[in-house]
Image (cartoon, rainbow, N blue to C red; front, top):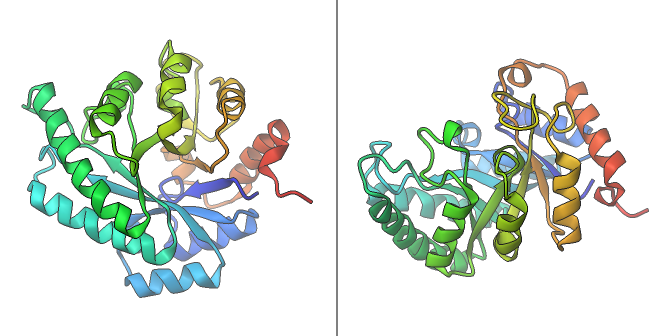
Length: 272
């Protein structure tokens, strides 16, 4: 399943090595790394385990917080991001996921300027290492503590302001499918999309709870059809934040989700 990956944020309570073992058993080649997990060990130990299980990171989450609402100085956020970019290059992860930070007390134009200037600087730095920065918008209800990009339109505005080949978008189905005009917004963003994350919701319109792909009622098939028919050919990363999933000690729920994805889109499987 060369185009599917599983984010470590979906298996929040599992250890780093438990994640790698499960991903290997699921037949995946990629894993989305979460800094909170690999930073509990040395970078060398994390790299050695990835090599042991023959897995390649599809992404590393997160860097950002450029607006300072998380209590970090901008200089510290940039230095931290540089460190993650270097590590991403070492272990072969093409993408680093970015959250801008909340708007806080800033007016929108000032928050946008802080994010754009930071991303242009980091984009130049990332280009030296062959790493791409993928900025992820969220829904307004989920954005607290994370980002002021609460719509695809706001994300497009930021990407256009950055105008940088190494700064693009991480699309997340759970947030994007809550927007009425997601197709027209995504069509203009597609050339800049670096990674797509998959998640379902318990209801089709404004879900309050996330769930694994194809265990809910969101229009994932329409979403995937649209992306594939418009030329997206990169990795899909399962990324679900849900207490029920976090408490699970078994891989069967992930197996069912992957089986459903492969049933709808056989191209996700390896040829032959």
